[in-house]
Amino acid sequence: MNRKFALRLLSLAALGPCFATTGFAQAAEGGYFYGGGSIGQSRAKIDTERINANLLGAGLSTTSMSTDERDTAYKLFGGYQFNRHFGLEGGYFNLGRFGFNSTTSPAGTLNGEMKVQGVNLDLVGTWPLSARWSALGRVGAQYASTRDSFSSTGAVSVRDANPSKRELNYKLGVGMQYEVSPSFLVRAEAERFRINDAVGNHGDVNMFSVGLVFPFGRAAEPVRPMAAAPAPYVAPPPPAPVVVAAAPPAAVVVAPRRKVRFEAETLFTFDQSDLRPEGKAALDTFARELKGSQFEVITVIGHADRLGSTAYNQTLSAQRAEVVKAYLVSSAGIDPAKVSASGKSESAPVTEPADCKGDKPTAKLIACLQPDRGVEIEVVGSR
Image (cartoon, rainbow, N blue to C red; front, side):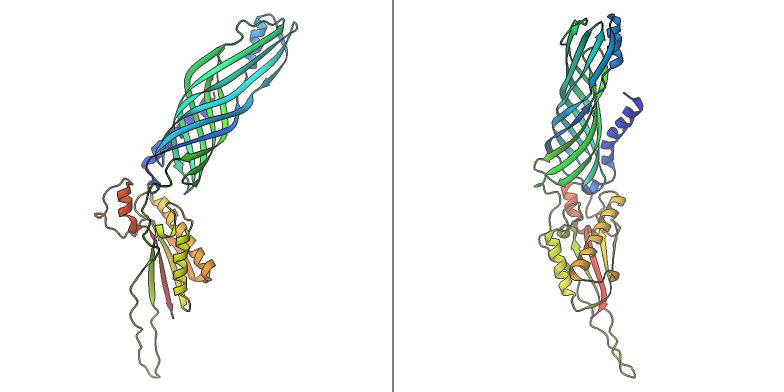
């Protein structure tokens, strides 16, 4: 195995669990079990030089040789996800079969085939790249059973036609994961298994696969409480316009200012920036109330709580503000030149530090910090 490549894989896989201490804590979830399966292609490397050397030692020379170094592979697995960044996974794998056919002089043939299957236990690290995409890294142990089958004709003879070997060894892997929904995920992975070929050699078998993951009960877990009703909080009405008498008489109207704040859970699914049906209905109601008004500017600002990294909270709050802006423009026909959108991350909390104590994203702390998460719309204009 290429040592540099192995070290790179090992480093990425080992770093995954470490990421649990930084970033994306806002997206952390409680533990849950999951299961699934993957299928793809396995690739091995037949040691043709050693086979030729063994034949030569028996007084035979190889005149031709063909190899079969690829096959279909699959695995079945189950695991426990402790949080968004760290899980433990075990399963069964079948890497398929690989073989060779050799013709010799004096006339004879030697045919060989190797089958590999086993069980594994991996430490799986997950690094979220966005609300749905994550990078995966894994390092673990696997107990593989290798069964060989040799046959010969003519001048070639075989002393042990069916050797086998079972051995505990390591495995590594990297990949990507996409969350279609809380109860359905898709993976693409590249894994490397260290294998004993049952005739005294060690080599690597690589597996490239696509898999499906099914969390159990995750969709029903109340990660963050939903808002009781989609109706937004509306600030008190502005003071009555002040009319100033002058010569010649003229009425001066002070432009009203109005702020409306929507709770994040009213508009969006947890840790996502796609508008929920309830969120669209709330924005439609808001837009109807603005009909007939002339606006100077509408400002949309997204807010996040203090859980998670500032960079991630900034990205999520800005994305949500842009989504609200786009919906108001497309659905209510508001001039996009008069609407601005930005995110303030966790820089403008509603709660006080003493109100919600703690740093770990427990259900209690997440519920306490709910007022800090929202989208604020400020309208300045004259009717």
